[in-house]
Image (tube, rainbow, N blue to C red):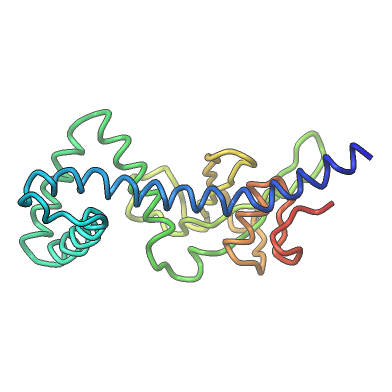
Length: 205
């Protein structure tokens, strides 16, 4: 009886935890914008002019204006100059480049082949294994020689229950395309195979 109750509670926790974490992150972003920018507005505005919520509104307006600035010729030049300056600082260059590339992978609109979910066939100890992965590159012409060759693919292999993974360079013959969305495939991979959209996002019993 206790085991059944514990199992039910664990299933409920797995179902509700993503929603709770999402709401918490949104709350943290709103709280941070309101408190940080709100304090600045209280100092800059005449006494009594500040209204709760103006900090968040100011943050949204600032992000929008920054986007407009980047679309202007001068803005693009200044941003490129600042990026070049950051890329000259050893530690900052590594962190900034990694974060930018990671976000860009999910944010940019790529062609279908760059969103392809595949399985990579490996053989370990005589036992064939298939690893779930995502094709991230099929053209290495813009990279230094030796990273990839014609007929090879870069495949990202995510780790279960961790923020991380491996990027492997494999021949096209070693991968098999899978007809599944990146969202469902990533959910399946990072939860160790327990996640399933067909089950309403709940783990299999």
